[in-house]
Length: 349
Ligand code: SF4
Ligand code: SF4
Image (cartoon, rainbow, N blue to C red):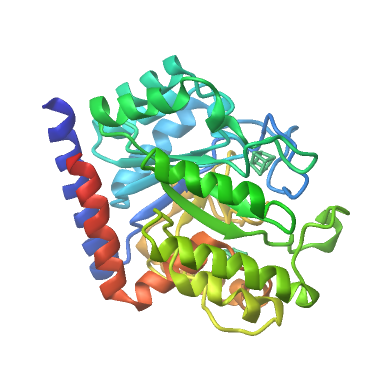
């Protein structure tokens, strides 16, 4: 009962945050990056820095106060690998106390029955586990979800704490067989799955030599991948991304400009780096000359203006599924509402 009341309070706070961002230019969504360190070494990743310093819990408390002042409704924890941050549970519990909804994206390597129980107790609302296949390969070892007993523990956390899990997977050139297995797995366990095509790093020096990126010569492979996914979607598999995300991959590899990143809009996330400075995008390891604690609606509006310019240069080279999906749902409100209704149905379970 307590958990149900907490969730109602969080939804109420999220609705207010959404309205306030519309009326007063406040920030509804914040991404907290408490660490840039990670315990894995995916070859396609340039979003980790194992020499970086983590956020302290005292700093986090100050950021949470600021987030409340800015009317934040949803706080996402990302990294690096956020589960290696030792203050994660404390931070999640503090968010729950202040009615801020939380979402955590992890590679899942530190998930155990006991850590899942702790996340549930702290009131985590959404757990996104990044998994690219059943097997560990030379590209990535993101296959944590297959640990014995893990799915049972996640199911229990859904029942007991209303903590909802989804799988996030990266499709690269030669892992589609593995992705198909994951899609079957998601159906079997009734767990949503989000599929994103690999995005080559913005800076060519960060590219791996592995042959994993798609290019114009890969249209036949992509035809099979796209038709395979759309078929599964049509027959009711719980794939979250809109059809157009998959259909438009051909436009992306031809470098057409056909979507607009939401970062410069009120739907865009404000990213807080471990130092507390604003990171323009989680796909960039940059820090702007602006600290989260200094933000107010006026500065948020200036920040959005600055991001507008930045996005001009990266949008054409980016096909992040979470950024595309955000663009899609803000331009197809009916589909967005259907998605929210599906989420609310999940909450009743
Ligand atoms: S698990 Fe995530 S952060 Fe860590 S190396 Fe892989 S992609 Fe990068
Ligand atoms: S288009 Fe948006 S999500 Fe993609 S790199 Fe640029 S700012 Fe980031």
